[in-house]
Every structure is written in structure tokens, then in C-alpha cells.
Length: 143
Image (cartoon, rainbow, N blue to C red; front, side):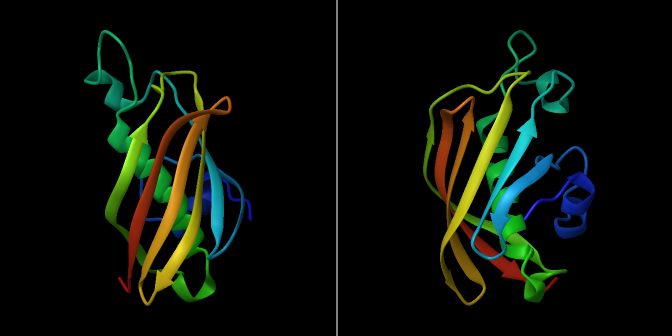
């Protein structure tokens, strides 16, 4: 499974400035996905976080991992056209700051699914160094 930004936009509803995955580089629909985010100094959130020292907000790193998980779930033919909502963030650990110039490598492995609710173990790293880990719960909606 590989998708560029145009193909991701066909799966996820997120648009600028909230589309936080540049590419899906590998995965298996309904099982897992691996994606990247290339962080630049032009990101709109750097205007306020923080003007004197640019650091990508942790909540946006969680959202980026959730979007990778969303692609994994919504890439299944039976889920095309549906929405995946983030329902829970559990045991999030922030281990490294993400700054302009970093390429964030994210992976979300779907570990459980019961009806429209699924759980994914997600992680983000920069140059192989862990940045964030979390368990994310998703809910799939028909619209």
C-alpha cells in the first residue's frame, strides 16, 4: 500500500492546514500503515508554537499518527467514503521534540476492531529516534 498526497486526499477528508500526512509508504488495508510528514518552517502552527523556538505541537503529532491509522482503516473497500473519528488517546508518551527539517516516520498497527470501533498502536520517530507513542481508538462513521 503506497499513496501520495493526492491519493490520501481521496481517502481522508483533511485539507490544508490539517492534512498532516505527506505520503503513505507501506501498509496493508485494515491492518497497518506507515506514513511520513516532512516538517518545514512554513507550517502555520509555527507562527504561535513557538515564535522564538519552533516545536511541532504534540497534539498535532497525535493527529498525524491518527491520520495514518485512518488511512489504514479507510483504505478497506467497505470503508471507502466513511469517516474515522479519533475517540481516545491512551498512554501517550512524548520522547523527542519535532522541529523544522525533521521527517517524521509514523506507523499505526490496528490491534483490535469490534464493529465500528478499532484500536491502533501508533508510533512516530525521527531518524529512528522515538518521538511519540500512543494507543489510539477510532470510531468509523457512515458519513
